[in-house]
Image (cartoon, rainbow, N blue to C red; front, top):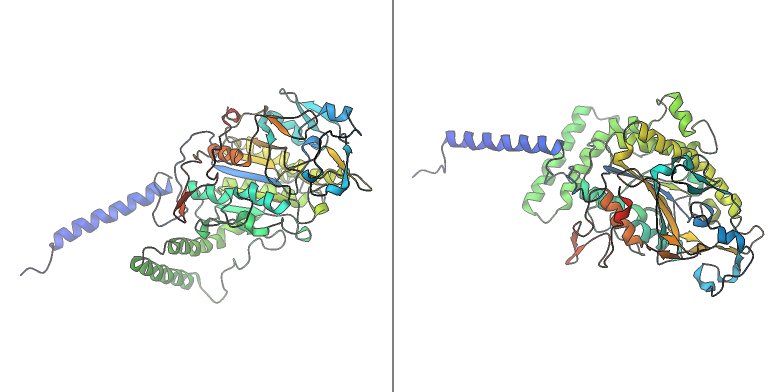
Length: 477
């Protein structure tokens, strides 16, 4: 009785064919034409349903900048300064006992570019780029409290535990870098703290944990424990990783439902590759002097944000998929949360970010990267057109209206979508919900928000929920 199911020649033929298929798979994966079943970061071909962004840089103006003091000019608000806002519900903001009258913007506005876009004097350098920028003036959200509003803007839900936009984008597109994280987060200087809700704002929720954001420390080494142990030679470290991968794959073969193992294997491998790639990517010291000056690294008031914007450009060049930068920290006056002294608050944070953001747009464009990089600017909500009573008046939270602008990635430059009412209190024309905004961001990256799903608790979950959000198609040129 023949105990061999096939001959030695058959075995060689079949094994050879299998090795060839593995090689072809690796080649296709490296060029983004096929996704590896083992590598959760394997680049995937987008559906090209909207824009053409390969990367996203989200400048998150934490705390909620005032739309009527930045990008949403309201002449009528200037005329009605000091008058009451008829029918105003004091509970709209967060401090109902501090409601004042309508307050004209203390900042001058002027028109810029061929589009004639009105911009506040807060942004003398960013306003030079208005013809590249696409403004959505009619955004609104459902919460007037920072933590749930932050979660909503980042994850599409007002409570923690859901995947954020960056996690969904990297889940949908993979990464074009095999030696850097696919999703990176940078926060304000250490003394200001993280945004409210902290790391839950860039968590992966029910998606595999490998898709969560990698937070870079604002001082010292950006990532802890990245250096190889001094007691290990590269050969021994490689051997240990190979053994771990072998053990994990054995466990995976015995219990295929352990899907997190693939992510764990890739995390070990990525950390190994990052030991050489990450320090170089995060180091802006070797940039030419004219680039450092362009971003403002020589100016103490904005140097920290300048370095982060420059790092964002360097990471885009190296294939990082999603980068989020937080301007503003935890407490009110440590962020764009201008309850008191709107002049001092917004002047300070605009001065920190204006030159770096303008430089980022300039630098991306001159390197041919802006068309394939979507830059987003915006916070978790807006601010009321009335004053909040204080020694130096400020503005309270406003969930009914705020402005978000985008640039690059195939969006229309110099375009303005939607409108608020005559004093900037509520979005009234072509209103855009947070889920609409998320659907549009995904479309800019070539992802269909209705098809980008993940099975969890028996449902096909998605970033945009079970409602019927719409892509704001008008923003694409």
